[in-house]
Length: 544
Image 1 (cartoon, rainbow, N blue to C red):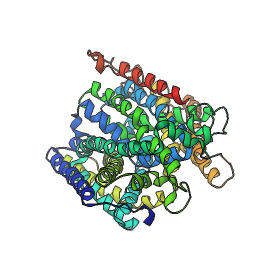
Image 2: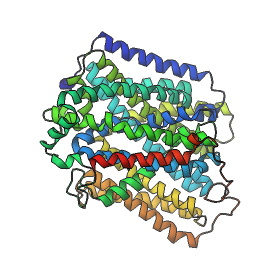
Image 3: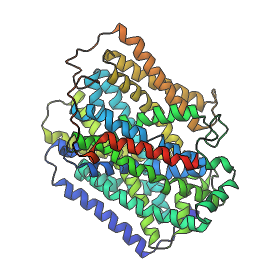
Image 4: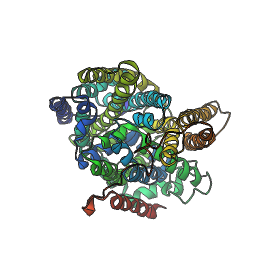
């Protein structure tokens, strides 16, 4: 990593040190408010919508977003925008308008707990265990990306950087629980933007503005196709290697909705909101900054593509994953460099904290309390949650080395989503809108949907089936998982007993109390959601 070593000065280190002291201070401050397990795991359900909304989007601004999307920008061009405008916004709006009333109204403490109420304990246990596994794997991605930055900054060995990064996150989560994570995520959102914006601005000045950038992209192997989103998707002859069918169905529907509507690491932020209106607005508030995040991820990826010689080489410092660190090395002066490094560190810590806080909640409530140690006092489960936090981060240190084996961590993340989130979304959405769906249909649709995606992934790895890219395989894997889960639910339901209407009250569409609309128009989730979706469509037009 010698080529990535950053020329940092005293001011840069000072900025980073101030940030570390601040996040630890937030952890100590939040600790004083923890009087119950609900305070530790769900912030006492007391957070205002603007706080949970910013935390919601900041929790997603981890390695996947910063390193992964910049890598995708360099590798796939503007087609990376699909991950934002069709691959996030509609699902975030759907979560706020349609699904949060079920989550928040049923007073569940986690997504797996909702599955236990809607279906049965086997469905609950399978989802709880698979979610816990997925979170420590994804935490490893964030930890690996954080270690890359610390390695570049300080010249440490990779394993040393991984351990140090883990200890920092561990400290404030163990101290302050979800409240510490959420308040730090709000802080981290502004630090991330402040850190990445100078890379975009200075980079664009260097290449002659957006027009100069686009002209230089045309001279790369991406060519003109790298500057369009939909124009070349009639087939698979485009940088992403996917047709519009795979993009719309695999990414825009199954992967996107599977992630945003059922991933507890995100949903947990909305569950901590102070009331139903705030909970519904949480993901929709997050959708507005999400529309503009490509300016500090995808655009820097393109800038790296045209300014960094040899970017994309599979070995050494030139992998796509290093697009952002390489730009920091080449573009930023001291002082500004410290802000950028702090922004990157903040992003990885936010992502990892979301994974870990989701993991410790599900492990404590859905595995330990439900199946191992029932009916203990509240303080006992807070202690278990803190121990689970330590254990989750230790396992995350191990999974960080798995992430290190991928030259584009976005491909790895999408593979995980197709395995875990896509079948879960299918089971959720069918069970939520089809009252007749039975408990055992829920279990088998979830399990066989996962098995279908896993089988396709293995066939891809062994080259029995060949796809144009790893991402195309993820799109089709997600689609296969979804279809399998829906078909299995339809086949099994008629042969198995259904739950009573009373058991399903508040858990399926049309069975709960009518929602009371917020009287203030600018707090109306439907209106805000429609505005977000329209803006996403309008942003596509110049780069169609």
